[in-house]
Image 1 (cartoon, rainbow, N blue to C red):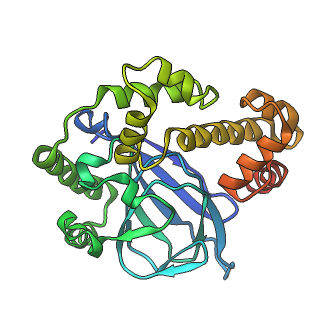
Image 2 (spheres, one colour):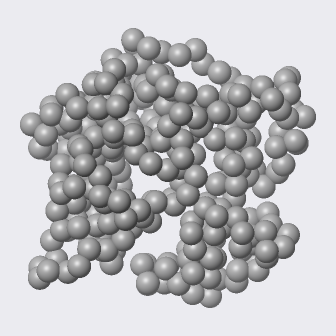
Length: 281
């Protein structure tokens, strides 16, 4: 494991996020490992809400604190597969929050999960006990017995490398190239333009995306456009022009921009700008 990590200081909810870099052997599959804990602030502050935006990727999630509450639903259990989300999830940040996660790159989770990503997509968390072949509950027990972050990351690395050696799926260059193309264009160019550059048709591309990504190419492109919009609003802060933001993200009318943004985040662009101002100052 690389010792390098990013630390995101606590915001209004007191949540501290740490991002750890995967080893070279897993860097083609794993975005990062992450740890989330609420920093004690004294007193008895009420629980806050953190937004968890979709990026087209899947992950693994392990809980070492109080029962997890996401989108207003209290979840029992200790470990889950976090399938590709279509909408922003809302995580309740209580006083005893402690989470550890693996975030795969979009389209790269199949060798580790052994399941079509279309089955896991939507928004909910799939309990580890529902996918017993993954042995996530046994892994959780080992993680629980290893309290230091470096030891836990090492266990995750070992687990993923074992699964990669045992169940490695063949590389799909066309899928990787298509994902790179959409990301490079930030989802702003039509899927038809992408298909015109491929040696096969749209139906084959759709099947590849459903199996490996869990989302259609069009839906994935929309997530990229909305993600770009969110970044532009963050960069612009309170003075961000939503008309300019829409144009820079590839939208040519406000109605389409607002529709897509709200469909993904649950907020209007103006509502998200207000959230950014409260969250980041």
